[in-house]
Amino acid sequence: MTPPTQDAPIVELHDVEYRYPGGSRSSHAGVGPLSFSVRRGEFFCVVGESGSGKSTLLGLLAGFLLPTSGDLRLLGEPLRGPTERQALVQQEHALFPWRTVLGNVEFGLEMRGAAQPERREGAMNALRLVGLEEFAFRRVHELSGGQKQRVSLARALAVSPPLLLLDEPFSALDVATRHTLGQELLGIWRHTGATVGFVTHHLDEALELGGRVIVLREGRVVIDGPTRSLDLGTLREALKV
Ligand code: ADP
Ligand code: MG
Image (cartoon, rainbow, N blue to C red):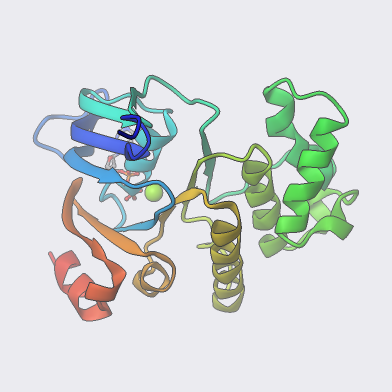
């Protein structure tokens, strides 16, 4: 018999709800109830209109928001806050302008108490993954928008999170850069075997990247299926008000 946790989903939600304090019950200020699970190693995309609850869902998975009700588990354990197992990349890079690229990427490892040279090695490996090794000693303001998002991605990757969450990470970039970074992310996903949760409001991006697409509308899941069973028309139809 295999140990019970061996095939446990990385993430499990049972009737998970989150309501923002002050939001009325009838409004959609929040998400849920949501019930679904994610297998280890999956690359799932979450799409939906602005305000549909994508960031709230990611905040829950990252442990930054705690469910108002329901049961949310990470690797079989109730999720009670951020752990070493999740990393979140946000739309606006939150890099420290006074630090070098390397200093920024080392930050997460520093927070986890990693010593030099372990920190340096982890950060350099992550920079290599995103193709920014030569930029290690540059300052953040010397970089393009795409390069800054690569640094944010490297900072998340440096801690080798089993669950990598990205909230519209490439949305502020031009289409070509967005496409390139998406393809690079796919390469990194294959290389690391991490589970990836990717939020976007670009339906084509979701179909291109995800093996699975979850569509949110007013805080609820309206479509959840393998990408091969979905197309743009189906997604657009699901989002129509
Ligand atoms: P999305 O990321 O899909 O644009 P969000 O998860 O940010 O959506 O928001 C979901 C719902 O919760 C929206 O109705 C939004 O107005 C509301 N909401 C988001 N953040 C807050 C907040 N800090 N306080 C109150 N309501 C919020
Ligand atoms: Mg959002």
